[in-house]
Amino acid sequence: MAVLTLEHVDQVFGQGSARVQVLHDVSFAAEAGSLSLIVGPSGSGKSTFLTIAGGLLTPTAGVVTVAGEAYQSRSAKAREQLRLTTIGFVLQAYHLLPYLTVADQFKLVDRIKKTGNLSRPALAALLAQLGIADLVGKYPAELSGGQKQRVAIARALYPDPAILLADEPTAALDGPRVQVVGQLLAELAHTRNKAVVVVTHDQRLIPFADAVFDMTDGRLARV
Ligand SMILES: Nc1ncnc2c1ncn2[C@@H]1O[C@H](COP(=O)(O)OP(=O)(O)O)[C@@H](O)[C@H]1O
Ligand SMILES: [Mg+2]
Image 1 (cartoon, helix red, strand yellow):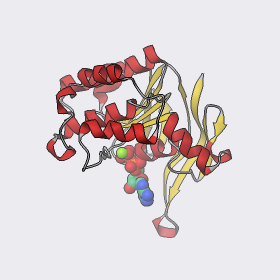
Image 2 (tube, protein in one colour):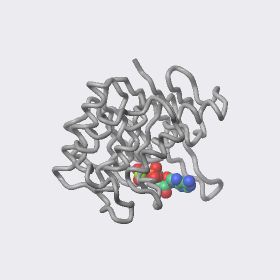
Image 3 (cartoon, protein in one colour):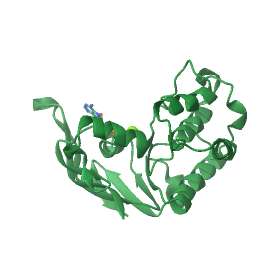
Image 4 (cartoon, protein in one colour):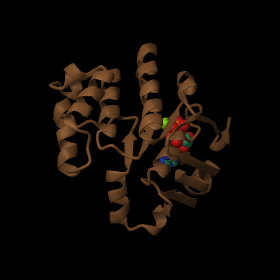
């Protein structure tokens, strides 16, 4: 079942001579239990696509639905609730809070979303799987780019969202870590029935995907 759809989405930024159309008639459906990979070069519109898919940006034209209902027909509060409970984001800038240790990044989630988060053992297993279990006492500034990236992935998964949207989740990772993250994302889709959507320029993730799309100059095509 498609849990997230984009139908005929256009995105235009700017006006007049500064007008740029970044997405052209993009249609897409993400299925539960499936890892969808959108591959394209820098500047092709991937982050814009993901921002729209997550309801953080309303497109210039077209409709985006989550769980069968359009963002546009939900109230701002309902959209916020949806992002809290149903959609996990791994964004390019990691968005870790600088004054919180890794362990506290998760406790903060508990304060914002009180129920339905991973159990302590499940979180411990996830941190071990990602190779970051011994970093829980550290602050983001003490972590490498790859470590921050893996903490950001774990934090996005902690609320156990039905949909996971990830922007370049492997950009800072070396080959073996890419394999771990690719396997983890595929496993989440397959064994936990999540709809996982990854946008990336990293061709190394292609073997893990169930559906691969190409994004070129704002046009999306199934590969
Ligand atoms: N808020 C914005 N205003 C104007 N142009 C933007 C904005 N956001 C993105 N763009 C432009 O849209 C194009 C696609 O950007 P982006 O979606 O970030 O691509 P990608 O993630 O594939 O690198 C780029 O040319 C970028 O400069
Ligand atoms: Mg991007």
